[in-house]
Length: 266
Image (cartoon, rainbow, N blue to C red; front, top):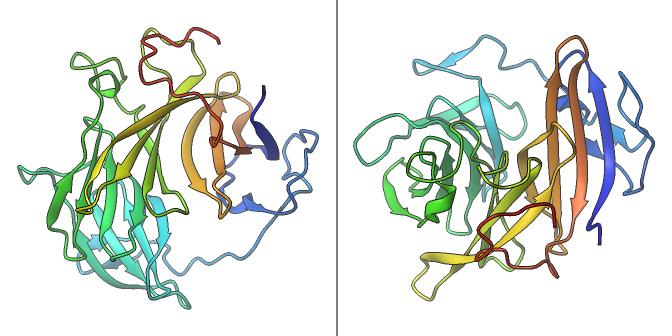
């Protein structure tokens, strides 16, 4: 059964991030070089263009998340975590993130947890770490060996945990791989979950298979209030440009593929 609904399709010569505010969830026909009718531009600001804050370049954002007080947490893939004013979008704070050895991260995805701590993925291993608001490491979540970058596992460098979201129950954390593992059919990516335990830590949970469109990867995923997922797919074709598609996916009845070594088209 196909468990996703197309919400928007964009093919353009430039990145289409500004065209991804979703309207009514309805299947739409692909339109080349234009946003679909289900997508509208919410707003745009160049307030951060070519700016620095306390010596850190304000850009290369790989993730945004609403903070508990309404401001935005903005994660740079260069290991800077900014706080942005919700009205002006200008930075009001920045902390530098690092791994346990003090090395910079290839940081990609961000969740602000209910207690204000930050859950951040890095593509390097890959990893998911919990940080305090000041950038101190509080915890590191377990990751299945198969999802690690080769030779430790079957993942390819820079194709790992690109998306991260906390489901509405507040107990289930989900990370999306960007591309398939070696030995899995191309286009089938794995979504890994963790379950919060009584002491607030996370243990490994179910794993799900998601089939992306041909040639596309999954750079972001976001839970909706009813427990479904908005899944962003994108890819680049030379001479054509970027293709961006937004799908609605439902993991609530999905099969746990944790023990399936190789996903081969099922």
